[in-house]
Length: 360
Image (tube, rainbow, N blue to C red; front, side, top):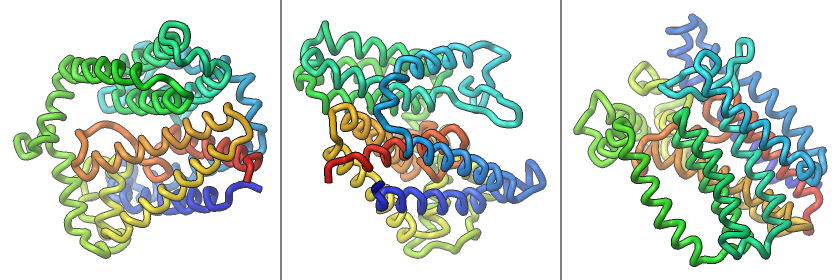
């Protein structure tokens, strides 16, 4: 039997997400497309596609993904190269991260996260002894991860790249890599992160606005200030569904990365706690599934999926509440977006299949 707590929490988040995408985007839908339901209708289509993908992956034996892992990774690398071609990749928000398919578009970097998890689960489960050795096991793994990260950064998309790298690090750590290697990697990684921030003026502005949003209230500090203006008035019980003020062109495109701010404004502290609780249930069940997986491959696959979810939720909520600098990370199941929603539901399907075969 699949894990019904995991399934139930996921479906509840999905339903809340569709309702909140409608509420958060209604003003923008009228302004841009003369239709308050424009974004909600598209989100329903994405949800339908995602649920179909989840159903299929829940039925497919998770071992099947081992034989497809290399091909999936190669396809994602090719897509990451194609999206960089001027005139082919679509520009949004200053990043060339999308490929247009008819009236819709996909974000290859989102699918690279899952492809990397599937491949790493296979590699690490087969080379557990090698992973304790830097040159033989850890170095080739890191080269692969940072090649993908480099292509994502060429778009540029620091948020998605950071989630992918952090997820991979969690998987490598769980597979038995040496702590001493992680200490040195942490030092190198911190230096590299600082260099990435210093290399782009807009990233430096994001850091300074994170430390003091009011230093540039109409520029780099605008989003976080408007986000906090949404969360603050929400109080304990919120202003009521559909009653957000910040969605009226104060908070830029509130149905995407900052949807948690609208949830807090309309539903208050209580709504925020419910959302965090539902994500906690998803992560708790995911960890239980990993611990009960019948083999190391299943355990690492589950760890990767849960790690990706946990890291993305932490970053998104941290950004919205002013704990982290602003970066483009969606809130799983809740934010508007086809690639992210479909990917997350597909990943939950894989997790459900592992749960069916897990040792209870």
